[in-house]
Length: 153
Image 1 (cartoon, rainbow, N blue to C red):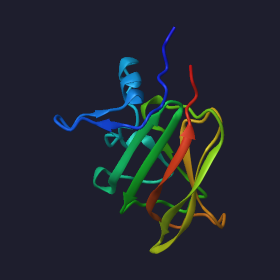
Image 2: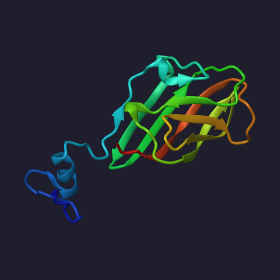
Image 3: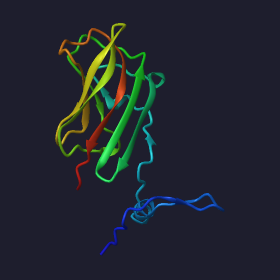
């Protein structure tokens, strides 16, 4: 049996500055990081429908909180042909437990506008589209954050 601690306010030790947080301790005992951002190294194979190069990846990282995963991404100076959508593979073998979506920012052919980032249940990719449903003419930048539930197993 695993003892799950009761959540209490973090208390900082006045002499050491160490924060005593029982939840952090609990996750460390399980060998898990809780809420630590992990940078995703550039890999061209993670992108489909558009061209992303190493210098275009300004930021790509994820953080886990139990089953919750936050994925943060900023890609600039990218290129695409006329396509309805592009994809970004979820990092670290993450599989979504259910549908999730978020409004993000895209730049299509020099015009910044709202876009959508979606992942389907049992999905392993984030699909990026324009909110208005029109195909991209030349996707130049994507910026946003998507929160999803990680499938266990």
